[in-house]
Length: 178
Image 1 (cartoon, helix red, strand yellow):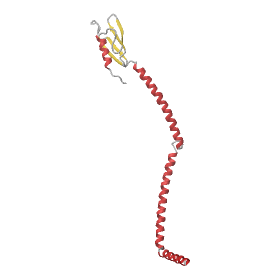
Image 2 (cartoon, rainbow, N blue to C red; image 1 turned 120 degrees about the vertical axis):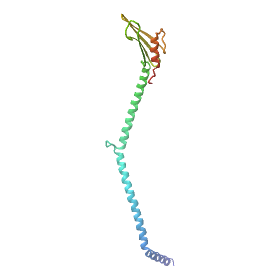
Image 3 (cartoon, rainbow, N blue to C red; image 1 turned 90 degrees about the vertical axis):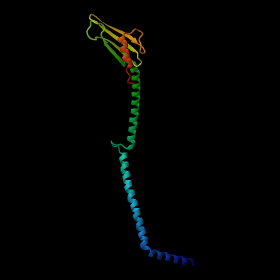
Image 4 (tube, helix red, strand yellow; image 1 turned 30 degrees about the vertical axis):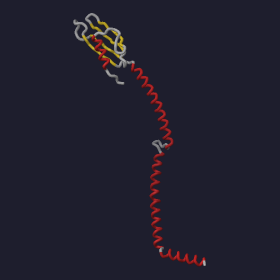
C-alpha cells in the first residue's frame, strides 16, 4: 500500500507541476533575471574597485603602494632630522641674539655754541637685557672727542649727560622682535 500511495502522490505532484508550469517558469525566469542583475551590478562594482586598486597600487613613478609608503617614511625620517637640526640652530641663534645689539637710541645735539649744526651725538647700543654701551662724540671747531660708557641693566655706573640719558631712554623704549 505504501508504494501505491507513493506512486499516487507522485502522480499528483506531476499533475500539479503541469498545471502550474507556466507560472513556475515565469517565477524561475524572474529569479534568473534578478540573479543576472545582481551579477552585472557586482561585476560593475568589482571592475570599479579593481581600477581604483590599480590606481592606488601604481604611484607616479610606477612604484607600488609598498614602495611609495617606504619612500614617504624615509622622507619623513630625513625631514625629522632636518627639523631637529633647524630647531637646534634656532635655539643657538636665539641665545646669541640675546647678547647682540637689539636696541639703538640716537640723539644729535650742538655741544658748543660756536659750532654750526648738530654735529655732536650720543648713541646707546643695548642688548635684550639692556646691557651695552653709550657712545658720545663731542664735535668742536678745533677738536672732537669720543666717550664710551658701559651700561648694565639699563643704567651706567658713570655719570651720563642729558643727551646720553635721552639716547639711553630711547633705546630702552624699543620693543624686541622676540
